Image (cartoon, rainbow, N blue to C red; front, side, top):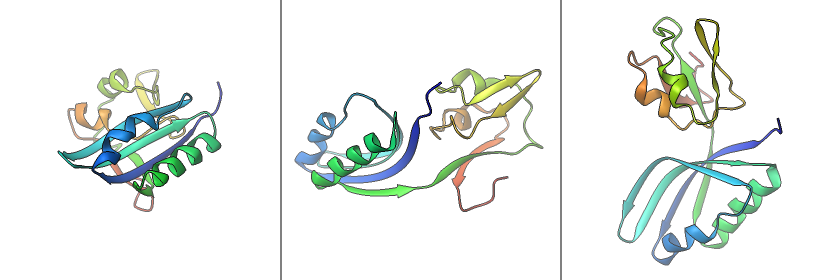
Length: 139
């Protein structure tokens, strides 16, 4: 499997720039909106950017900035509370990248594959998963 590059960015844009966003995405990029705030003339969002290589990511971020979009790279990670996790596999069923794997009767997280989309945090019945800053505790 080819290694992909992942980054999470926070963007802020207004006016015509919002409409231009759809023209920025190029082949080889995958975007997942983690959360967003949208009004008629502005958008603020956290986006997970995944690409085949770092050059694609850098080009994408440069293009956003050229459109006048404020871009801030942020470091987030998925944290699992081992004491709370029931290994029920609900998180595995919604993970879009396969970062949550089944190993026998347990689920394991693959940090390299995780795009920190938050799907698993929403479905976990016991709240064992959360998104945190990479600088914070890993759980």
